[in-house]
Amino acid sequence: MRVSDARPGRTDRAMRHFVSAMLVVVGIIHLLPASGVLGAERLAQLYGMSFGEPNLTLLMRHRAVLFGLLGVFLTFAAFKPAFQPIAFAAGFVSVISFLWLAWTVGDMNAAIRRVVLADVVALLCLVLGAAALAYVHRDGKSPVV
Image 1 (cartoon, rainbow, N blue to C red):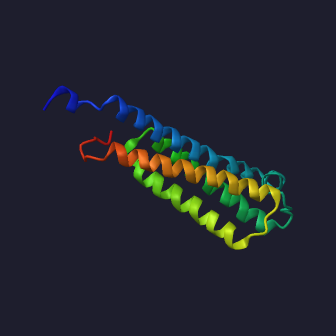
Image 2: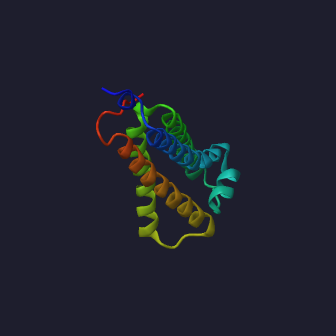
């Protein structure tokens, strides 16, 4: 084995950094709604609707916690390559399911349209990041470190 075969090339290192960057962006997008855990007023700011009904507020605050957990995991995986494949899978499930649901509903207020736009950006980052990860692992020799 040549020395150049033992160390990842400059392109591989750049791609690894790109994968991490894409996961951080998607992680941040998922962390933004976590502030909804603070209560109905914050939820109203995020989504442009009233959350006066206590049961709906409870469900949406719980949703904020789950988004926070996913955002933390995506960001953590950006720096732990062994977790990156599952992070991409979780990110794709989250983003694609929301975009599909939004598409089926159709009529959205301006705040929800911003959420849709953020998820389109997240989807683009996931696609690009997953492609870069596949490139890094293209020959099966790249270590998951």
